[in-house]
Amino acid sequence: MHGSRRRRRGLLVLTSLATAVLAASTAPTAVAKSRPTDPLQRQVEAIHDTGAVGVHAEVTSPDARDSAYAGTAATNTRRPMPRYGRFRIGSATKTFTATVVLQLVGEGRLSLEDTVEQWLPGVVRGNGNDGSRITVRQLLQHTSGIPDVGPEISALNSADGYRAERFRTYTPEDLVGLAMRHPPKFCPGAGWSYSNTNYILAAMVIHKVTGRSWAREVRDRIIRPLDLRDTSTPGDFPSILGPHAQGYTAFGTDTDIDVTELNSSMAVGSGSIISTAHDLNRFYAALLGGRLLAPAQLDEMTTTMPAPELGVRYGLGLAEIPLPCGGSYFGHRGELLGYVAWGGATRDGTRTAVVYVTRDGGQDTQQAMTTLVGQELCRTRS
Image 1 (cartoon, rainbow, N blue to C red):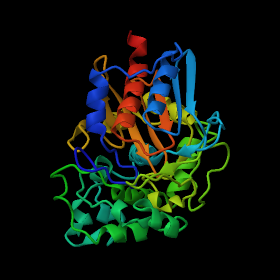
Image 2 (cartoon, one colour):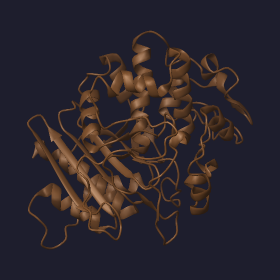
Image 3 (tube, rainbow, N blue to C red):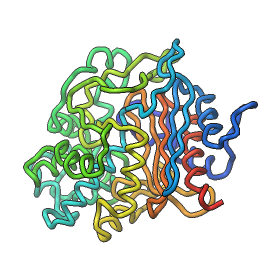
Image 4 (cartoon, rainbow, N blue to C red):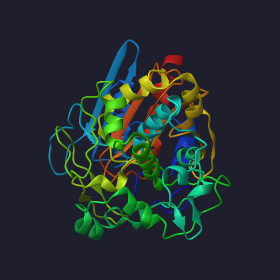
């Protein structure tokens, strides 16, 4: 859900962000009594107090790196949160996808004004959907009007659906076909609406332009050059390899279930990457620092417009979020069953912050996470 509507479980939608950002920019973090004096640790403990099972945050600047942990790696255990723990980063994947698309634009291999039909003939069609009227820019900007496929994925929407279909493999064509069962939300360019289908299509465009898979392009263009050793594109492999905490989801009920195992092929391009807080900080620093995109393409990515559903501004695969100390930063929220992440960087990439939790976060958790990121990115200005 976006705004004040009931929050929908599913593909890493940036839910309840408007309320959380507003509260984070106007209220200090709630701190329990007798907490450690380290500000980052206090904020991580505050997030844990909202009901998260485990919490990890890392903050970096040119001359320092600070990490903090709270909670446990699994319920009913005393096993601590792992150092450099891996997790599904959800919609933060969209920034990786947009980066690859913009690299291809910079190489002259496609244009943001190319239509979807031009690259994927016949794919976006039916029930009023028309790929000949939708541009690549509109996919990345969420202004295409294309319906979100998330509600069609059973494993993401109920405990029974998860148990029955958590190992199911989808192709991108399968996913777009499911979305095409529904009419567009608006004419292309006439509104703004968050849709994971946009980024599934962007992954398909990358494949068509390069002749190589989205996963291979992300690995060769971002993961390997930045030496993101704990970041991967798992395809249909359902497990998280290496150190990781368990993820939990309640699907809108009062009972959490362990959802760590998941075939994330339903989130290709939109939410399937596995990474760590450390690797995400390296990525944001490189991206905003100009190491991945030429200035013209980075300007395109960070030129934002109002995203009314979120209460922030949105560019091409990046959200622009107000800072409590004034100004703004760029980042992206991510969620994919049991793991919720928030992170970003200052405009020049010199300071970054990433935090993730291992349980669905309600409004209090969202507020505490956005508060942490905002306050930590402001710290150099104090």
